[in-house]
Amino acid sequence: MKFQQILFRVGIPLLGVVLIAMAYRSYSWAGVAVVVTVMVMWGLLHFSRMMQVLKRAANRPIGYVGSAVMLNAKLKPGVTLLHVVAMTRALGELKSVKHQQPELYRWTDGTLSHVTCEFFGGKLVKWDMVRPAVVENPAAPTQAMPEVKPGDAAP
Image (cartoon, rainbow, N blue to C red; front, side, top):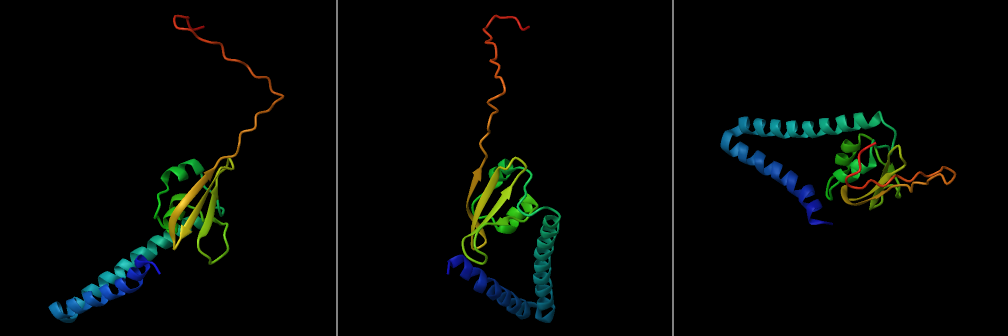
C-alpha cells in the first residue's frame, strides 16, 4: 500500500480525533461542537461538489467530450478521475476490466479523436491522444496555389 493511501486512511481520521480532543481540552463541549460542525460542513461541501459533477455528467453520452485536443492540453498527472469528469462533463468509457488497477477510460469527440486516460488508485498516471488519419479523396482534383513573389501586386 502506498504511503499516500495509508496517510488518508489513517491520518485523516486521526487528525479529526486529535482536533476534537484539543477542542474539548481548550473550550469544553462548545469547542467540540464547533470542530464537529466544521468537519461535517467540509464533508458536505465535498459531497455537494461530487453530486454536481455527476449530475452534469448524467446529461451527456458516456465517453463523449467536446474536443479531445483541448482535453489533452488540460490534463496533468496526478489529477483525480472526478476532476477529469468535471472537465469533460461526461463519464469516460471504461476500457479495462472492471474493479482492476490500472483503470483505462476513453473520451471521444465528434471528429473521432480520442483521449485514453490511465488511472491508478484514482489518480491520472498517463494519457494518450489519437487523431484519425485524414483520408483525402483521390478523385478530387488538386489545385496548386500560385506562387507569390515579393513585389508582385495582389490580384
